[in-house]
Image (spheres, rainbow, N blue to C red):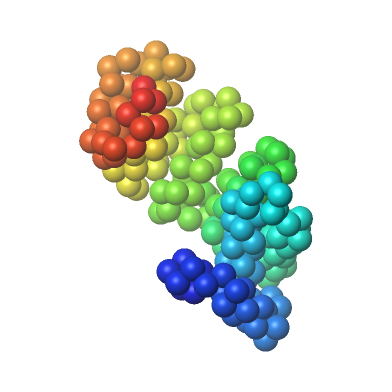
Length: 187
């Protein structure tokens, strides 16, 4: 990932991932990171430069990583989360995405981002009681998680009609991320 994230050496990073997977085709971390790299390359490419092979490779690697984990009867919240995001954003399969968001959140109760992703997904499904609990869990884990604070403020205002609580959480969100336009304009 250093070559990809820091050096912006995409071919070098791709070569390293391919070498790692040649040595061990079931190396879960390499499958996840290479899959995410392919997904990001596909997602960010201009329409005329998108390669379906990147999209297909990403899907294959993310699924394979989760399959390996399931077959070994282990848990890997990051793998569940990445596959859930893929299923939700790319494949628009809310039911399957819900399963993996829940697995990620339930198997890593100390990770604010997994709690937040699950809450955001449940909000799309209109499961507001559980959404509130998951946003609260996110905020307990990371009291400065601006997106969770902001989304929870909106939830309190819109669905629970708690304007005072909403205002408190909105102020906390703006304090946590004063330059984030989504946070500042959300409430």
